Length: 354
Image (tube, rainbow, N blue to C red):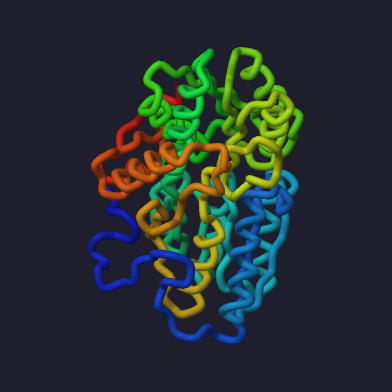
């Protein structure tokens, strides 16, 4: 399958390292970039909002015209994607895995428009049904690595506190992009504390905070000392449940340290970087449809947010040592079943969520 970042044969092409790293010509003044949210909406304080920030950064730094539209339900995907094309977008970014089936249809209808999708590979099942589609680029994130680092901290803090060695994770909809975080969280929590138990529950929602709060409260009732939210805007309810119970919460996608009390840290996914880099590619004539961009620890595409000052310096140092091993490849974190990372991370294997 494919090598990390772009295909191995494309050594002459420019690899994505960080935002703004793709070498391009000056964008055309008439170039238009568009973004379609998923059902989490642009006010989710995370996944969608961060991608909108990447779009706005492209407008400010590249001088391109930008348009965006919010999806309030899955029935909005088709008219929203089509609307962006009709409004003259040269590149249209779909803000998540859930848009993949619709995106494959729209991209086939408009072969002269560039499309990207966050958290899905062009080699995913939706796109394999239409292999002739060459105008889609996948933006894929090694979120298992980010989940690993926050899980390691959760394990260290739980071990130090004593009592029940239990932590929890609250997922939104059970899809690989969510489960990659949780698999990494589970795996590395047990590197820190081999006897720890990881409770995993799903709200089946990315918006309704009360649903995630209920899942988190059930886990807290079973002794959970840390709650990791992997559910977008819904997951803010899990952070609030952790704060109410006086235990640690862990944010996701963006730095959510200030979103609630008692936030230990956050697992970062730089989806803003992905949107910016894809637009920079396309506006400079270097768009690589039919391939993926991989964002991981090595190129700064994922990471860890602000860490509570209550975490001992020795634990932070141990986490950073683990990070170095992940980058060097001496420690490999499993991925979720069906994960696109199986084809992008060398030696990746499937691991359990708990």
